[in-house]
Image 1 (cartoon, protein in one colour):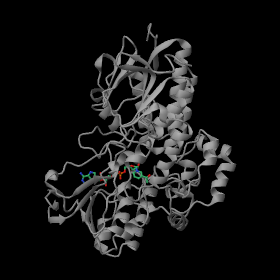
Image 2 (spheres, protein in one colour):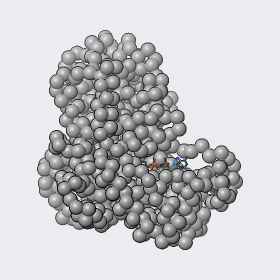
Image 3 (cartoon, protein in one colour):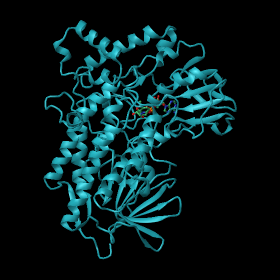
Length: 553
Ligand code: N01
């Protein structure tokens, strides 16, 4: 099904495609594969020197996935791919995930339609031609009927504004844009700002190599042992031999009586068990490690304050057990509801504070005042360092779309539209931005579902919408304002039944100064995908289709 042409056409300086995809990470790669498979002419652009997106940029020591690699952190669309890729650990390292994505790029011949080291600098819609024009950092200007933004939910690094940073004579690196050359910590004094997933993975690894590590912690975090280990061949075989059932299980709708669709828990109610039975479960889950601590827990975990507090107390007890110095243990004590910031897995994080070469600075007591030539200055004095590691996270979910700041109908700017709220319809489309689709945008389950599978399902929805337009002879599609408001109500209604909005986190935008504060993740789990499929089946309620395409469009 080609609406324009399979091969790009030259139109002056402008190449023309049916679809331009921004980003060649997990989502962009699948979007390219799937949309190209429909017969559309598709071109993907990425600023990095290779495919992989997040898995290229986040090469800090200790980076690895936190779900089971097989089958959860891989594509599901090809049973052959599942059969031929041998994951070696239960939670793959960054290097292994990147190698997998490189393999996928070769296996499905994606590279011929991906232009790397090409940053999309501007994207604007022309209502008369119903096309997007895209300018890139290489000077190339292309035109496409559809713009698919696979820009990543966690790909715009957030770097704190540190007074005096330009005077600092040491090295400064960010976990989310790690240098291509290896960073050596041997014999060096290292400062790490940030104790989210990235910091908690990196700190124990850096501490093994560095002369000294000073951790600057603003918010203490709960973390549970990752218990990563080699994947046994029979475990991989069990996934492969039952692939149909495994995939169907991943797609199954949540039970209607689940306390929270995205987290059904172990099927037992905490209130049907004695306090002793509950403690025994927490202990068993701690021993098991992995995200089983969340998903094998009671379904009430993320919706009931009393049960959540009990789990917090259990984890706080673990911190006191592990960390020998009581003052350090006090500083490490989190006080938010467990799971309302992204749950974290670690390999020896709390134990790292028992090392002689690690110091913890509690920024709530002793805030950073700025950088000097030789280190970090806090209220109580100077901490000399040679390397500063910023593990300070991302302008998440909406940040990369805002950085792109596309211009929709009549020059409408996304930054302006999203000044106080990240409105979207289904998390896939934005009113006033016809023919623009997002993958893992605000209003999708995004980061709270299986990212590769979510990308596949969102792409397939987008593909079906494009097919529908083609069949109906339509040239443009966009969401209505009313549909966006309704979607927002739906996202909020689910979130407000949970403890998530009670905590400052990057889910709510609270990690970025001045960012609108609201919870922008759909907590429907697999139910979200059933919901959007239903909307498509019932005739795309909430979308407006405009006739077209115009002649020569
Ligand atoms: O980022 P974060 P991340 N001064 O935002 C602190 C995914 N991921 O890169 O909590 C001082 O979680 C900030 O403090 P606070 C995963 O979804 C997955 O670690 O805002 N401190 C916090 O401690 C994850 O959730 C994997 O008060 C400052 C830290 O920096 C997401 O990416 C691995 C500061 C940032 O934590 C983001 O994780 C890694 C400042 N000015 C990442 N600004 C796996 O799959 C920020 N902080 C395992």
